[in-house]
Image (cartoon, rainbow, N blue to C red; front, side):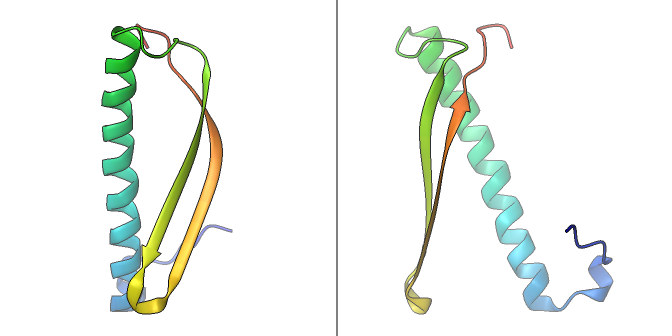
Length: 79
């Protein structure tokens, strides 16, 4: 369920979590997109195919580790 609260209604800690996760998502997306495009252009990956991905987050101070795995559909060269 999506949290529809305004940022002004959130605690500072909630805002810091959201900022971290947004930054993680935006920067990772950009890096993946650039690398995948390069590898497709170089012939190292096949366009419109799938690759397996695992993302891991570790927080030493909390002894926390979390990972998710998925399959990504690669774009066509001109996508």
